[in-house]
Amino acid sequence: MSEFKPLDPLLHSQLRLAVMSLLISVEEAEFTFLKEKTESTAGNLSVQLDKLEKAGYISIEKSFRGKRPLTTCRITDNGLQAFEEYVENLKKYIQ
Image 1 (cartoon, rainbow, N blue to C red):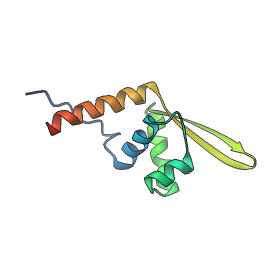
Image 2 (cartoon, helix red, strand yellow):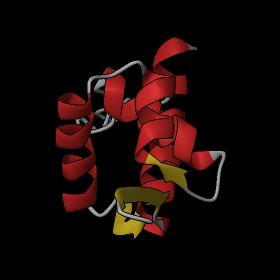
Image 3 (cartoon, rainbow, N blue to C red):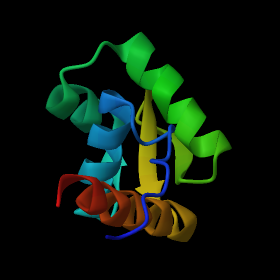
Image 4 (tube, rainbow, N blue to C red):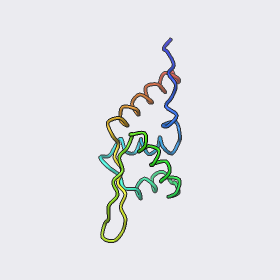
């Protein structure tokens, strides 16, 4: 029987896990894309992105497209590693 490791509480949140799952499959994603795909409110998504950024799992770049603000998110190497470990640990629980 394999050893159970605790699941990363930061990734165990449904919205944060959804964001990471989306970012793992694209090079970068705009805030509006993430909001649409996760069906989240702007406020809640913003809070969760901030938590992921503070943990070093994603990087956030703020710029402008014309006069409109543009927020672009990317998964970091640390985020990719944390996501892969989360998935591996989760597999151990469901085997």
